[in-house]
Length: 129
Image (cartoon, rainbow, N blue to C red; front, side, top):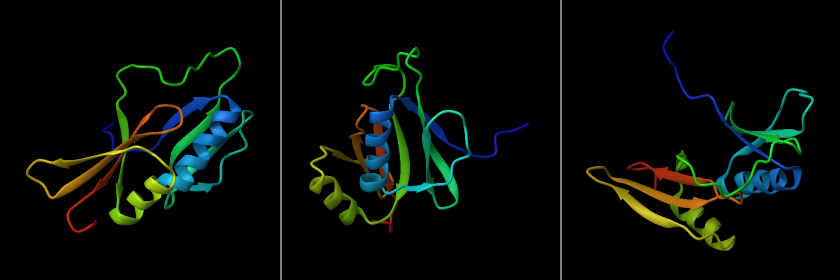
């Protein structure tokens, strides 16, 4: 069976950090909080349109999920429009970011980190700025 698309990614952390991540991905990145099945554990599902692309799940005290861990994960990327509006939002929230351009494409990328240290990219295709 072939892969037919991307579904979601999951971040696991203690409850207080989950609330900070929720606020960050809703207020800064622009995802929307939405319905989540009634799992036994606490968490949030954040959406782009009808798709829950980010699951935030509470880690149990025995899991030892440390933030800012260096590994092979670099960042998650979201396709966006409204570059000026998003840059203003990042600046209002005092979030440091870098800007890059994709060679041979008219594409702009903003890179920054979420409250747990995970990399985030917001990508703006030609005509979407």
